[in-house]
Image (cartoon, rainbow, N blue to C red):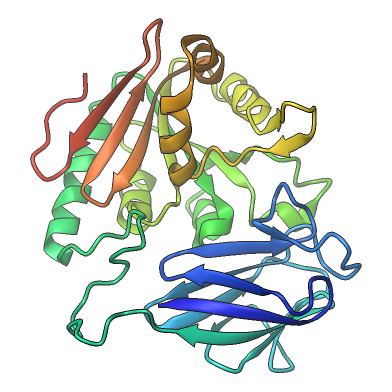
Length: 305
């Protein structure tokens, strides 16, 4: 299944945006903060809304945009999308179509996210729960302070959850000067030894690309400064880019391509990054003179080295 958004008004009118099941796209004016940017739309916010597709069809969530997100003429905070719905973000209007690519002979019980290539694998609820319990046990054994980088744009509940639980957390972006980024920024979160937040983050976010875990002996403030610097990168011709390395789908592809020197600079005070490969396995990227990758099965776990 995929959600197809045809642009019928505004920049790039006549073109289409495809979103496969299990994936989302940030829509906005800023090309660094958004997956799909409309830089010429004067009414579009830097990050305006996030639109995604799942087994139930499409969905849209407004990201505190100035002009609002509208579905069929009604301003919405979030809404489900069905075929024929009109979505307005800024001055850009999309028409939604739902395309089911499943073969006719496929059974009706085919799992959610199968074939999406991301962490939402088709596993039983019991196996998923057992995997999360094993992950929690692993993380509690970490000798250094455990942190997470959580992507506020992945779910509307992330920032709300951090606020409600009084978590020791801070955005990597300066949201005081750009309040529209408050709910979509990456947040550094520190977990103490008996944290009640950690089980909640694993329960709700593991397998959903909420972010990555990491360990460090550095202070919160110094670690934040290092991670904040990693957001800004340049292409070979000097073009500045915003690097969403805190997305596990990005980090697990990026780190294996690094040279030893690139890895040293990227890790800095980070001892290891812990990244979901799928709902039942984790990748431990361990820093040092010779960076290591250790795959940990949460079905039959062995201690990370």
